[in-house]
Image (cartoon, rainbow, N blue to C red; front, top):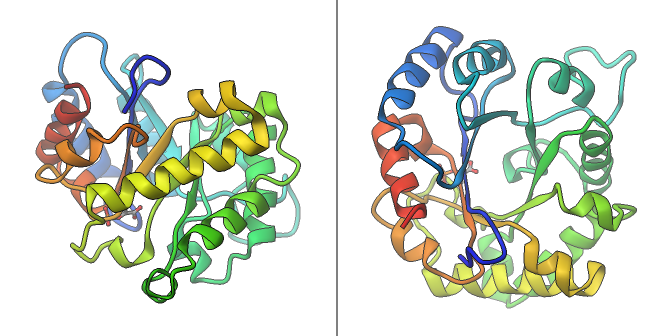
Length: 255
Ligand code: PEP
């Protein structure tokens, strides 16, 4: 990471884990262990029902609370959906958009683009996920795939909005598998993402863009991954469920 231009971000993605009571217990423990003073940005993206408990527990701390997805629409007959406006009103600051697990459930690039716009319009900071499958990596089309996903997701996003977008490179083959990308593999794609952002938005905004790596990041491999110049933090699934592991990842980011 390059601290001169960007502040690191460690973001947890709890997926479908933890109840509201467990959220409260996690945050009580986590807050007590949090290093004092300024450090990297911290976000916890939690299941929708846990948002009120998380927002309450994170009040007056540097932990921002986020959701794991949002609707592409602002309101209407979409049973079970939650709009970005509702999330912002509930106290969320961030939302994950385009996670591969949601794409696997049918979310298209067009949906991801619409959700990104909905999140930005509601004043949220989206964490936009992109990443290739193992087959795409083996076929040598990772770069093209990532460029396509990013260009599609960012269609119509203006330069003044891009400052609020965090991009997370998450190779699908590394998510929840224990097979982390090597620091070199992760850096290569994160650097490509910055090049794409440079082409779309210019050098200054690309330099300031926060780009995360996600995919089996844990307290053991975080130091090496976070030492790469274009990796500005992590989107962390499994390891973010354990306050002690998450604190150790934060410590690595604060080095
Ligand atoms: C994720 O879900 O975004 C993720 C990176 O999960 P894990 O850390 O468990 O691989």
